[in-house]
Length: 133
Image 1 (cartoon, rainbow, N blue to C red):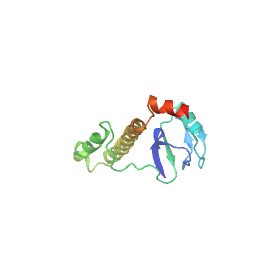
Image 2 (image 1 turned 120 degrees about the vertical axis):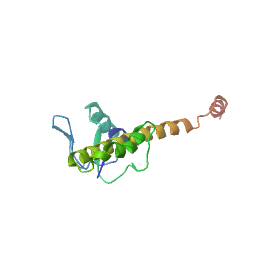
Image 3 (image 1 turned 90 degrees about the vertical axis):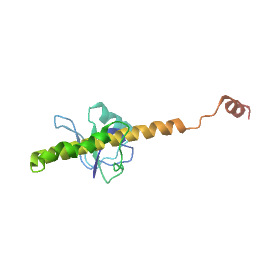
Image 4 (image 1 turned 90 degrees about the horizontal axis):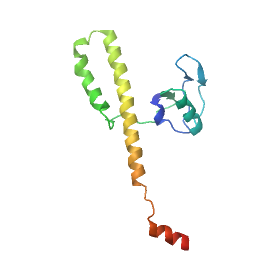
């Protein structure tokens, strides 16, 4: 089971937990297989993250394209004076998970942009040759 940003969801993934709106109303039941249309619908409701079965997204070792990785690294020093406070430890863990997911999301977007740039599009001469054949 893995909580992932909705932007990292892909068709074929199955929900490990039901998707609920902020007011607690269930939108999609547990065990439902995601499709492109379903992912788009979830996004339209304002849901930003979902819990899927297994661990389909590698979130480890990602610094992300933004400063989220740097922020995660600073959490330790920022919370060092509160090591005995259970509430502060829980807050730090929550912030760590949040910035970890945001870093993964930023890295995935950067990878998608890079992959889109690497797509070899035919130039005008190759396109013309293709039409003549």
